[in-house]
Figure 1 (spheres, helix red, strand yellow):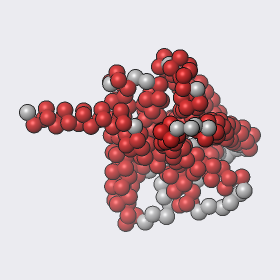
Figure 2: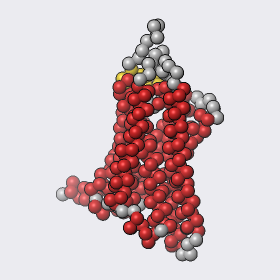
Figure 3: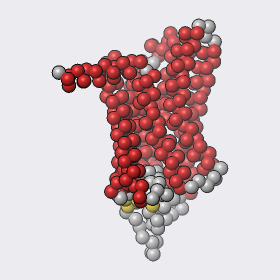
Figure 4: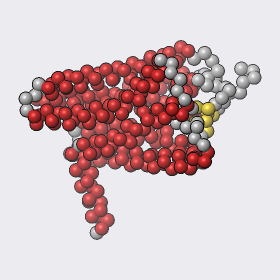
Length: 314
């Protein structure tokens, strides 16, 4: 360590291949994307929180998903917008580790919420008579609170990584700080830490995915046994929405893990694009999916907007 410089700040590269001539355009697009996600996820969360009519288990899960997306986007995107707008890609080590913790915590939280949503749909479709007594609003609230608390155990990995010395290059080839990118910059043997974190990530990703797949296989078998077309159509309508949301979240992540396992060499820009795809596409799409496919939320938001317009007009 005698001739090595220990860095107390990192630099987020964003898309490494983007020319400086396109920085303003890139920052503008990110700014628009962030504002859409900020407004839509914030609106979904607030509407479900304030409207007593929406105080139901499934809507509570949607509210938690929207709030998680809201926190994730706010913790990551403004810094990247500043990088392209003001050439402010540098981030202090403390801010980087805080961001890394939030990124992993909220990603785990999203996977747990999606798993709980799949279980909720399984009970609603396969055991509809027991649904109201099994899945209550209070039980769902306790489950969500427990998930927020338990998933925060990932703080341990941030504390461990923060103990390593960092030297040489301080460039984080990503939109935000994450354990995989930060460990590459450590001036120490991080093999054991990387293996432990990879194992945890695989267990969370493929464990929750397996539970979701099992839930929807059971739902499919139950739906196929329905004799009435109306019941089949309603169940199909609900499942397609949730399967699409799950596909947006899991498909890019599974591809990234498979590429890593097969040791495929991805270009830096493609790697960052996949990070953006898996991180922000679900947050951008989910509010529109739930608002357009869920009649109660759509009607309440429409009536609220009409009331606001009428109040403004008067």
